[in-house]
Length: 308
Image (tube, rainbow, N blue to C red; front, top):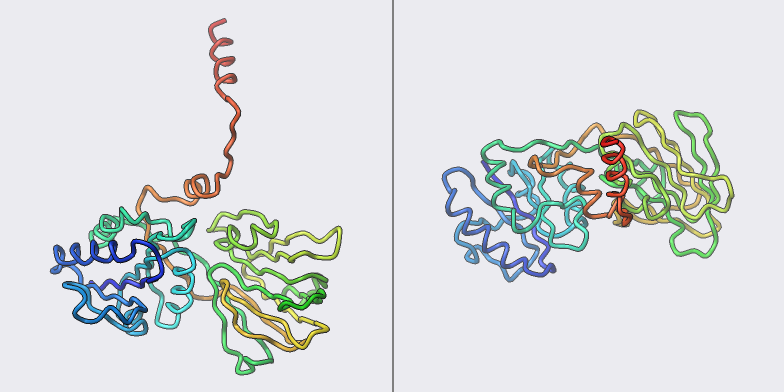
């Protein structure tokens, strides 16, 4: 078995965690081979006892499991590159702030790796979304892949843009807004949430369309089946608009550019242990459903009525 580690070197305490994994790899050397990509030139082939320094491209190609040490951003950027190799399994270790997607605690990383090696885990499959620009800088129709969302943005221009949308060839709306978020269920707790979108269970078979600051009293987020094809055309008084996937800019495109978006045929699998689940993470990380009222009074009334 081969395990690859992608490191965000800017995170606090990452060196300590790498040392811990290096020692752990030495104890299970007969069960797994470990590769590491640190994006840091200070680490060389002689920096570790049991971790093999490898390029990102080769690491993604040969590893059975990808582990990211960083935060949600590190995980998202890795997922975008993983699909270019093949469908992979990924485990996100949180060294960042929120750690909603990268929800493996740093102190549990070695035990979670051991669970994976011993097949004591489950695979949480997540949908990806793909976007194909029909003209503009990506005129070769290169697909853009995202786990969370694809965002159309007015690119710092002070005026709103017009976004015409068709669903399976049928006209839906013409948004006058700062932009549009096209989100997967996984991305519903990201940028879309900040823009007033709904929280969607990650295994729901839907895609979210969420306008950013629409100039209208009636525009609301739209939820559509994930088998739909979304045709978008963007108009702006400026020279161009921006297209982003999972927070990374994919470039600027001229007014009139057409985009085709749909669910990708590929998925990504998050390696989880039994104690990890979406709703528990939602409660813990987002404080979802937190209520400071004393609910014992209702329990007391029920018990009191039963006694009578």
